[in-house]
Amino acid sequence: MAVTNDLIQQKLTAKFGEGFFHFEESYGMLTIEAPKEQNLKVLQFLYEEEELAFRFLTDLCAVNYPDLPGRELAVVYHLHNLADNLRIRFKVFTGIENPDIFTASKLFSSANWMERETYDFFGVNFVGHPNLKRILNVDEMDYFPMRKEFPLEDQTRRDKDDEMFGRG
Amino acid sequence: MTENHHHHVKLPEGSIEKQTTTLNVGPTHPATHGVFQNIMELDGERIVSTESTVGYIHRAFEKIAERRPLYQITPLTDRLNYCSSPINNMGWHLTCEKLLGVETPKRVDYLRIIIMELARISDHLICNSIVGVDTGAYTGFLYVMQYRELIYEIYEEVCGSRLTTNIGRIGGFERNFSNTAFTKLEKFLKEYPSVLKEFENLFTRNRIFMERTIGTGAISAERALNYGFTGPNLRATGVDYDVRVHSPYSSYEDFDFTIPVGSTGDNYDRFLVRNEEMWQSLGIIQQAYRKIQEFKGAEAEVFHANVPEYYLPEKKDVYTKMEALIWHFKIIMGEVDMPKGEVYKSVEGGNGELGFYLISDGGRAPFRLHFRRPCFIYYQAYPELVTGGMLSDAIVTMSSLNLIAGEMDA
Image 1 (cartoon, chains in turn purple, green):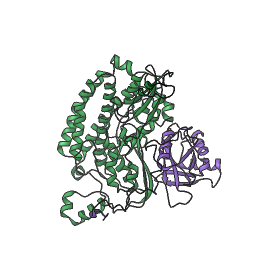
Image 2 (cartoon, chains in turn orange, green; image 1 turned 90 degrees about the horizontal axis):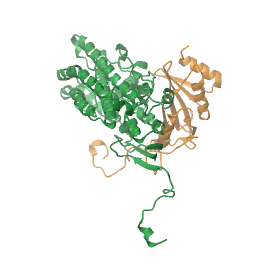
Image 3 (cartoon, helix red, strand yellow; image 1 turned 180 degrees about the vertical axis):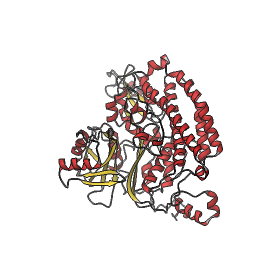
Image 4 (spheres, chains in turn green, orange; image 1 turned 60 degrees about the vertical axis):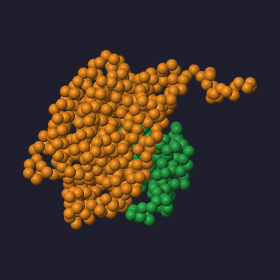
């Protein structure tokens, strides 16, 4: 039986219990949210369960939601079951004060650099990662630039004189 | 300590006793074809270990995109895999169209396919001929350049630029293809097969080339999948995953083509897969061109969808009509808000699955935009591919993986 969004919800609920997940469907893609402490268990279940077989990690990244207290950072995994050709999105949220998330790099070798990138830009601390250091930014950088607290350009700067573009 | 010692270079602890040599390949080195650094530990010419460093040309595209309306993001995508910018542009437009719910007419889809497949050919052409250069055969590289030039001339006819193309709009193209564009396309379709044949004759059964590439830089299908390989690199291991077939976009389902696969996942199979893909792309372009010629009457002139909220009006209308001028202004200044939502859209790029994860909170610019950059993901496997092999093979492996620094560093 080919895997479907309904089947995934059934299987996950049967394994982890009612109310553990939050399911949502956006543009046809099932989005699953789970508590962050269980991210590895869920990923492993999705990977190993014969009927689900989400064994390809397409993408891993983070999103910063400054307006959600206690849920400021989301780590988003895009998984793909290549045999049945179904994609899903898996999310875990964490507070920005204690952004610890278990690493998926043991399950997927591809997660290694993607987690380093996510750490580099958002400061998500991937617990158990073999080499969690900056990858695209300089090592000396002491902040996480993709967080929303860093606006692209200082709006109050005075060294530019271009009134036509609203900086006047 | 005598006076003399002060004039000598101070070596790190243990340097004299060490049995291996540390070699710094890159970040700027003729053999890396891009800005990558590899710190290799060598035992003679054999690689004991290697550590890759990337990020030298990071330009913060994802951050910049959070302040830009959709159209101003297209030029950023040009600069990812700049060997096939049109595919990136189209991928981005398709992502926007998915979020906005824009349906494109068939003729637009076919025109896009022509451009995307031309881009794929030029991308593979560069990669394969560079593999030739790195194994000591410059001829192929110089020979095929004039056909990449012809492809660039076709881009130029359509959008006005060649390398960083910024081609197309949300909903279609900025203008209809001119007759010159089609004439050049016909010339390409007529002449390129014999050139590609000759290119293959130079390499495919060439003894030296085979000795250099067979069995080097190999990876198994299982490891390749675990490392997130996509594109020709994955197909060379025997996995027939192709976004064009698995998640068809731009009406790829209307076309008849096969996905070539290899078996060993080594440099030679990667080379063969890319060559065969060029033949397949040629077939797709021919089919698309035929389909385009079948459109009659008004349909034969369609080059964009009817979406005035997102499609920039023609310049001559902007100068003469009030309505067009208003839309032009609104679109350029990003005054048209996007719907709320989250989409992931991917296309088959030159070197793998190029994905766009776009989150919109209903504003003028994306709340978050993430690029799934194929070569950033599969380059992690490089140490595993080259450790235990010779340094000279590692150079060939690097070029046969089709690593593009612009894409890797975003």
